[in-house]
Image (cartoon, rainbow, N blue to C red; front, side, top):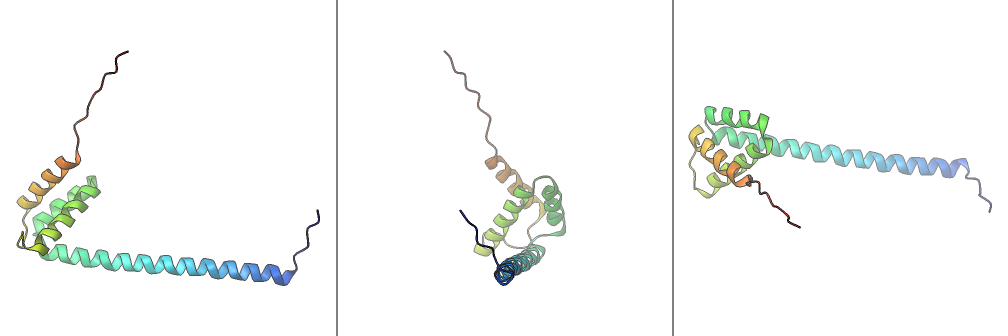
Amino acid sequence: MSVEPVDDAELEEIRRRKLLELQKQLEEERRRREQQAILEAQREAVLRRILTESARSRLANVKLVKPELARAVEDYIIQLVQVGRLTPPVGEDVVVELLIRLDSQGRREPTIRFKRK
């Protein structure tokens, strides 16, 4: 079994292609992050228009402890305003009610099962 030696030109071509591929992946990742940042900024702007200061403060506090719950409530509020079921400005009392409702839906009571032999 013999292995043919790879000449410098082939090796350089392989390196060049690999470098181009990595650069392309990095560019796509950068573009995706920029797009995500733009969408997040738009989302924050919408929430600033919809929520009162106290409601935003409440959600910010919840976001520190349960970011997924805060995100779900924000999504739900945006959706309700878009379909006309809530009218801005949305106050802290509505946010608290939605937090309680969505948090209780996400929790399941633990069940204990006994297996008898």
